[in-house]
Image (cartoon, rainbow, N blue to C red; front, side, top):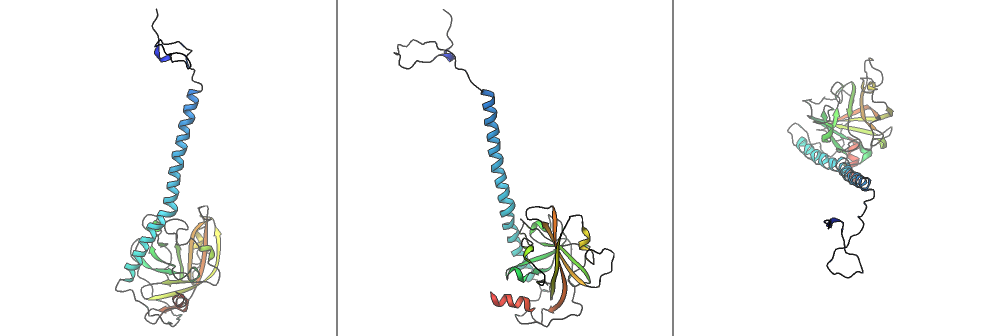
Length: 267
């Protein structure tokens, strides 16, 4: 008698178990390859979804946590420097003569901070030299374009910052409107600018940071500030630009500008 392949045998239900194996037809595996392929693809898609979700959490939440923690320490360290004056909480005299210019170091060195009263009393981000991602923008700083003027200097003090992730200093830039104040605080002065306009441009339109914005080659006569960031939110297709014009400055030994005192009193 021929040998029996036990891999193709099973006990039939409802039959007495007399210990004798009974032959049945082999089971056919239907769609084995296709089903396996679908299962693998499904598992890969689930894994990709999990990884994508983790990336989104890291990009939109954890980078903010890290950058904000870093900025809190940077601001504390900056204010602790011996040459940074702690202004008394009293009205300082507005001055229109040329303000003192901050000292500028290397990439990533802090030259001051930016206050935007429209965005509340807790809005304060440090301004660092340079606009590289690793050393400046991805660490939560507002970056200063190195080839543009310094705060208080005749020309265009042009800056850049993230709008989402990494602290996002310019996240709410669309809320800043014409007539709002932008206050740059340096070691020994407050410089008050007034917003005069905003626009959306293509990334290639670098003339927005010219000494006279949008007029490259024209000698500047005004002290300007320019804020640049990505637009729309969660995209880098365009750039949002906000312009401000210098109004006055306040010596920190004398006090604070009215725009910041109102915030302090409202705390």
